[in-house]
Image (cartoon, rainbow over all chains, first blue to last red; front, side):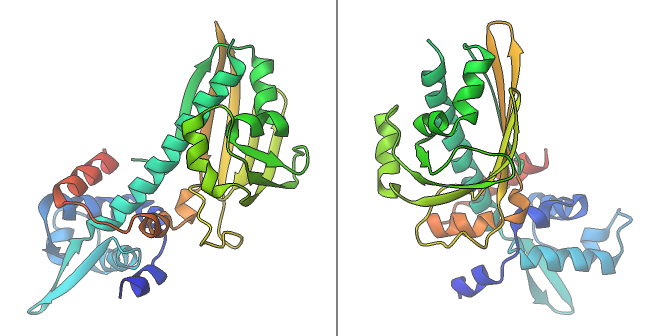
Length: 108
Length: 158
């Protein structure tokens, strides 16, 4: 199951490289799971547009949905964003260490 | 949280010394922990492999399991003495993954003379093309609590 999810996953940062989608993820993570109707409340974004964005986020493994009666409730899938952050942190730390070695080499 | 890594540091060394340490394949290899088959040449790929650095025993220990692992750097720019750029498959290097068909990231070194030394800015970009989460999941495959993740997302959107 997990392997399948991983195989079909789209790049996380590409999915988040859009203000509307970033806003959706932020809203779901601060306000909790909610319907499309609630997600569009107070915004200019149409239902159709937000559905597309949600599907793209779901492809990247960043959100999931469950059916509740006639409505679909969307929630954030935090692990994936955490994984992405950890990966970048790791690379960032490798650069920090590399810079210290460069410093040893060039500074007297 | 950003998908561009940027490091800015001032090194107490003349610009030309820093430039040579970065743009010369042998010198770069010494601190980076790598050896290359040929000098760097703009527009050309160069093959290299991991060789544990002699400058930091702790890092060398970390690199040791990867000794000999091949990598290809596409040298993008050598603009003496202020900009050196290449594309590669970003670390951490994992022997179980075939990187050859995966997208690369762009690493850029920019140098600037400042009082007391040389300002070095390193940026690595292009992570949006890479499934970093999958890589990380392969490496760690664990989960964290909700609270931490929510903080993370708040950090991301700030």
